[in-house]
Image (tube, rainbow, N blue to C red; front, side, top):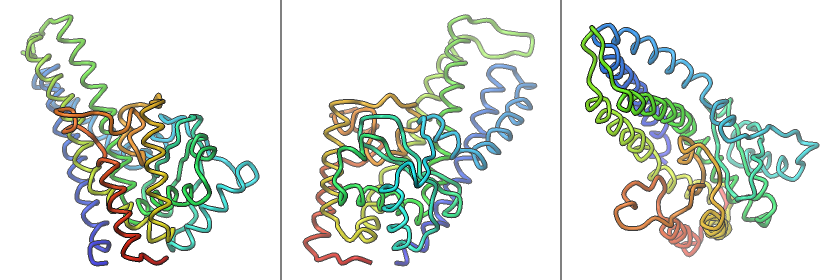
Length: 296
């Protein structure tokens, strides 16, 4: 339990570090593109982006995923499950959203438990049993309870910004040119684009893997059925391999299983996986069940 109490503080520190990183990246871009005067422009852009990332990252994440909030009359069973599990987890009722995709998947977003949303795909509601759906929702509520959602949403915004910066630098590297302010030449811009691209991936890796294990554990406690969550993870993983979802890569780390193809990557590419291996997650959940985990 001590680890759970520390989680909000740790996540607040990580969020602060990510926002500081955004300042450094945009000021660096300003220096590359505009010389010394570009530092000021980069600072202003980073300040604006940090404001947007903190206050509106959840809306941006939902918009990038094409998620739509649904009422209780539109999705009564989904609302009932979310309300029941939120009560068990001692959480306020989050907004309930549906993503128009046949791949089964889900994520949670928001600044805090009082301003949270749970988004599930149409495929998840159609393909999962009630117990499996409860396991997935409980996992997402665990992210809300652990306050993972702010850092995850901010990360999506920052990765999206870094991707935009990378495209700008590629454009500069292709078309070249330099100005009287002494901005960098195309080769430097190309190198910076590569660095920024790697930075985007590393930001996602820095916050994703360990929090999934913890959300699985807490989610299993909330639902009281580790094996149902394990079964859901297997089925979602299989579906992700068969039908990768068309999503913005900046949000891929937010989903319970990588929607871009699951765990199919191997060898060197495995180092850049944003999620733990599903097989390891399932093994841990099965171990919880064998130890006789009871509903909390």
